[in-house]
Image (cartoon, rainbow, N blue to C red; front, side, top):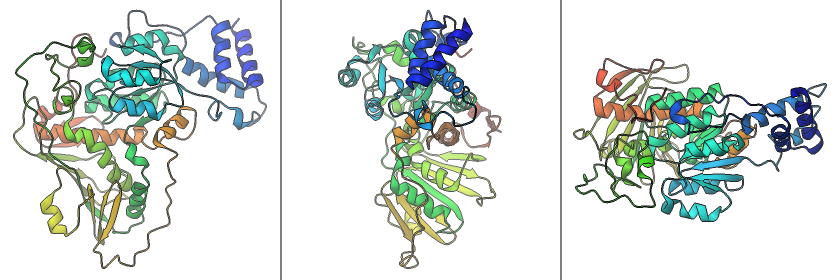
Length: 479
């Protein structure tokens, strides 16, 4: 029976040139499945045991290629990965606010499901895509249609990144995930390892990675325009943090499933100053301005210098509050010498570092990063780059561009999902960067430490170690 079903599936691919047809054939003729071995906290009441659409797509493509007598006998143009007519089945989890922008980014694919705990914030996306099935709980969505999905886009608050992403990856689904990837260093590492193990296409939502000006900055640094870099200063403008502590407990709006919004975090009464936006500045739910902007801004030195993980992290700032993120912070990440780099101190600030800027004699307007090399200085922002001293670089000729233009940040990921090249912010690149961002918060809250990245240990600081992973609320534990 299995052989006959597989034969039908392969014929469907060869004759009709559609892997989705193959999937339908398998579902029709092959009445067998594989067990989805998910932890209890990821399963809804009746998780389907049918083989996933993604697995069928992947495996049937391989099987169809296997009928050829030599590699390439089936034209490349009709493969599932490259067919312009083959659209991904995508579920979007978190579709209001930033999520709405991400929904728009993948709008040309088949948006088969939308999940959001807040009906009002999701309304715009619901109206734009009326054919997408609507869910409040991502677990129920996976129960009902998980085997028909190829990928998910996750745009929830930081504290609810990990659980739906982990569930999706266990199902073999590709993942686009908002920054800072996860709420803790441990969660971040776990997702990166799982994506690698399951060979999934991933993309962290650091969309400024695709800006052409950023490509030119990377080219300048890599070509040695300012010599050997020993310092980098990065900052986010403004001083957001330390919101007022609510002194009232309003009723939860009917439109909002607040218990699901809290998810794995410690429960605290609903307040509109925290949900839906202010959560960013509460440790229980967010990661402050460091998590909010760090992956966007540290992306440039990470990419330019090939950074991976620091060996030492120190931080300073105002008195630590147990519940709320600070308005200001200064983090120093020390990166060890490598074959490519001298030892590098990477500094992160809330607000431009005025004293550093004055000392270096540069113009920081429109900028968020300063590279200091032994032959010059490069000041840059998302849309700005300038070399100093000005007189030295007056006649400077920039290197020929060698980083290709992005086809679009979302398109990179979509292509990767279909078997193309990895997206530029795939988790093997962006995961270590996200960990570094989160380590800055750990050092601010618990003091500095030497960092053993392999074992996830804050050497010599037991308090900091407790922040590498946090406990989950009952019912959301990881098995």
